[in-house]
Length: 381
Image (cartoon, rainbow, N blue to C red):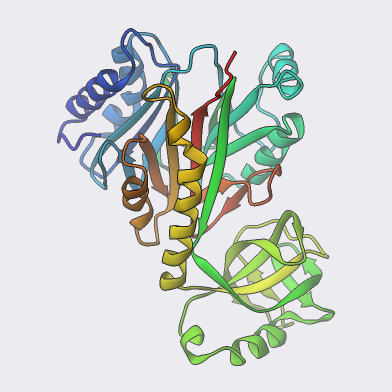
């Protein structure tokens, strides 16, 4: 990571640090680049991805964007550059751009190989970034999972109009992504920032982005009754509506969304999420103290996931984090307290991507921290 005031200097400094930390004579398989702050000129930012790849010399696959804050090295910054580089011999990378809610335009041979990856014993990991106005991002995530059921997608939503990097190119619309296939292991861990409260209800009628009925009753009056029954401390916290994730059981897990408005008919409009009648629904409150305790539990699972005691060489495990830009920033620093020798890179974003259900597709999340642990497989081929 670098906080140098000139972008060219910041990029050069961060790349040099990555190259020092990579194994001797190793080349980068893929690189993640994040830029934050207003100090850098637009033209310089757009060229940053190409400059990073040129400095690495091996033209690694590159993914990244302009974010609210970036994580790298030993810290995080709202004004600077972070670069994460990984050397994964034998792994294969494919980058793409998506502008509609369909599979990215890759050739048939590539999709066939990716689709067969599970049968071949390979893992498929993906990092995807989407611009905030791209409403089809959930469709892209779902379609990737249909083709590659063994895949895990991490990433997040950048603010509207922000630059996203893919290889040498820069875009401000749609989504960009990198697919990584190979003989490695990838575990995901999600720390939630909203606590469930009240009963679990069934979504019995929805239209567009509006929840009209819960348990066959008008949604708004029923939610008000639930709020009134909460303890006073919970009533003072920001309220969100949790919608059951794809494949979720009656008790969740839930994708939390802000409540935007209440209609005259008693319907409740929520921020962008696909509403499916029959899905479980539960109110949530943004509880910082609860979230901190849950994060501690998640980080303990990260320690187990990293399997430090089983590693036979340095730099055979690494991690990515995508965290909500609205919540406190304890997750990145706390990760380093638990796993000080595991390289961590990532960003604070507008929304996060991750799978809430084991083996399920990733969803667009809110007020979470999503962590991916990349680990060298013990019996790697």
